[in-house]
Image 1 (cartoon, one colour):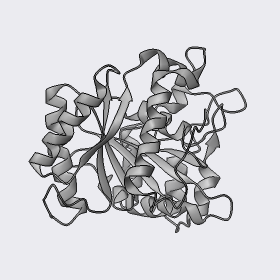
Image 2: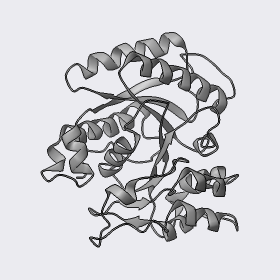
Image 3: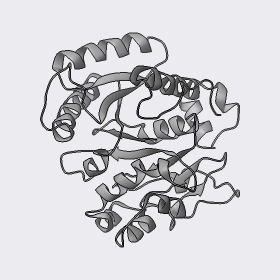
Length: 277
């Protein structure tokens, strides 16, 4: 089983929507973890399985309190709660000020997330929304235990430049300073583009060529459709067939391509077909 971490650089929105979309179509049990030091927002935009609100006091902060006394992977489930539709979520911090309570614990959380596949209470992959990361962000301690780190970026030139530089810095931190386009260390670093559906493949190819030429140790793994209507449906603000949206269809293809591209060695399972929803 695996920890799949999503993050972005300054000015690149869409991490939460991408994380929720990928978790929704993941081919086996998944836990969506809001691991953004700046705070999460699923408690404001999502509905719990019982039809009411998610409990803001049960999630990453309560898990951190447990982790200070030692943490085994299966204890993560004690702090998770189901959203409407059945997806399990570990809600994030209420504010950036609460991040101080997790000081020194990000690595512990990363190891627990990565080990959740061995939980006797139900194996699961963790899709972690790590928000925006920078030089001072503590989340690279968590990313060290990920199987894949996906840097989310829109396709504006300035955002592509930032994600290129962030990929280089992250590769140096996580891969011990090795720099080279032919070397993709562990955890794998991929770029996930938020793009207009028309011309997405061409744009992805161009950005991938740029990353390879820059030798930053990362490559494009796919595109998520820029689909405001689909994002509104995913957040429960709009009705309709979610599985028919461009957002979900593109998320499903990203998951399928991840399996095919990396051989599913880090997930130990077959190439997924049409998953949920």
